[in-house]
Image 1 (spheres, one colour):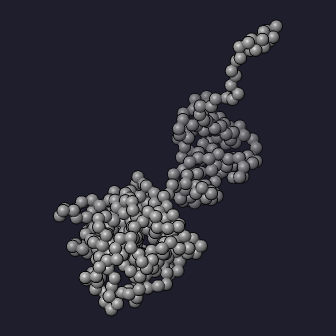
Image 2 (tube, rainbow, N blue to C red):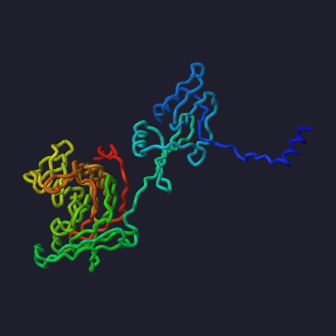
Image 3 (cartoon, rainbow, N blue to C red):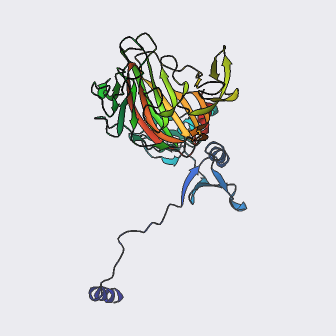
Length: 401
């Protein structure tokens, strides 16, 4: 009788019944384990999870940990058979990690088996198993990069070409610069090189191509390789270019061709060197080599490098990490505050401090600016130019030597 009454009432007064359970969050993951002590050691000492106090009466059969964000892991004693389905392509759970490289180094030191791969979206994945065979994915999320070349044209960049050199001289005094965004001989072009879009710099005229935007606190990464052509007045000299950072002010203030800036040298055999342009200054730990040269030395005295200092405006990198001609090299530049790090093919070649420049007769911090790439008498290709914001220089970088 009651059922009939409810049915009739439902017809007269429709009742809204939820078609699904409302979930407000993830609470905990529970795993059945064979050896509670061994599993506790693994999750505490290998994965570094923070233990949660367990009531005294449950300590022999339970172990709890914090994942973070109000989410926990509960280990339950009682498993009597191994985990059968322990393939990384099947059932597993995933934890977020900040740095896959550091995790891999740790696992190698511990002698643990693991598998590392990069997912289609750029995320790094490391797979390990706990003592029972549960598969755990350690996931480093993909880094967001802004690509500075669109692969088609030079949108977002400005070109500047300085005064041409006379055919038989290196003295361009009195010659007029070609100027801003005037490139009649196509010194700067987008091409396909090794089946990838690349910026070709012919080197025929001295000058630079610079970003329209300024950048501060960033990680810049790019690849380069040398071409074949060389031009007067450097036909018999090393192939030369350079990545200028914190570029500021007018074009052509340095020797008629480049902006005031700090230089990450790109030159045959000298990749990673430092040059200060138009008064830009850095402090670099260095040791003397011979009568004139200074070489980067992490244990050396910090010297001010500028045209008017004892050390001069050039510091030699250490070590030499450039690949042979014809191969692509990867350059990484970290800038945060007044500090910069030059890296060539994964090796730190120099750490620089206290970036500054003269303003109205006083030295002021120089911590932001445009990025300018030099044309300096040699054909060179640049590709994969990308940048991302950072809130610190990773500590591990200082150990990459």
